[in-house]
Length: 421
Picture 1: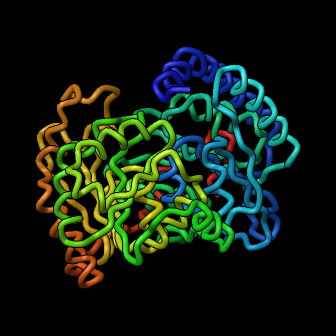
Picture 2: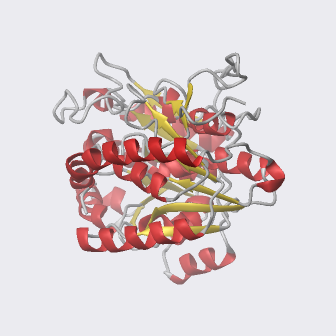
């Protein structure tokens, strides 16, 4: 099901329903007077929910690792869509998972009902909903009957204050990994974001990739020219990719193009624009690899060149040198500061736009991406291949934690029936 269709359905159906759920949850919260204290030794089941966004799931691994440290004996269950199953199965901090099938409305309704039933049986102590804008995800959080439910709010906490016991302000100008960790801070624990990952690449994943019989060179560069349908304007122009690939192949490098099955036609068009000489040094794997095999491919690559999308986060979590191309999104939000990660970003008046509006103001004419020159990408890639790093990345200051009189971090809103201590 198209991402835009999911968003429209959420707003048309889930938002009105969420208002009613919110009022009901406020009433029941006051009547039941549940114990919302968090004693680490007594926490048995934790649920983390992130339905969409492979990159966001990888960015939340810092939260997952923090929860594992804070609650070493608890079972951590992840809720997401089936498309992310391979990734979840390679995250060592996750013990179990519940998957929603969003292929069509019928499967979405059936699998959501099954998911809610499964959640209700688990007697959840802590539920962390990482979705910011989805009313449907909020309804599921309430239906889970979790004792403590942690979520985000942006402009207003009004319609969520009953659904969640604790709400954290989502500041789109902060690093996303730090925002996710704020949910753990809402428990009252001192935690800091750590490195992304790990993503475990198993021997069977590498064996499956070898079984494809791909003529991979000893050294190759993975190139991801795609972006999810949430915002296609994140794609660097195809012509720019072609010129960079031509130059890199001329330097003797092998280029391996990647992409999901629905992205294969776009990748093939890029391949077809290359000169015959360049094609000899390019391998198009789009639509041919499982997610497990993609992990193995990226893990074995010398470098990755990618737009701001899922494979970028995979590459960084696997510790690979990565050239990241940003435009509609801001690198301070989803980027990673590391000496083997190069971020190329040319801000314009309307960038970043992806966090604020439904339709980009450029109407597809993504000048923020067009301004990144192929020469810059080739130079950054060449230096990473030669030195393994660029100059020292800019330091990212530690975010101080300011608390209120009750000892809770500022920006945390609790339901009226939840005591402050």
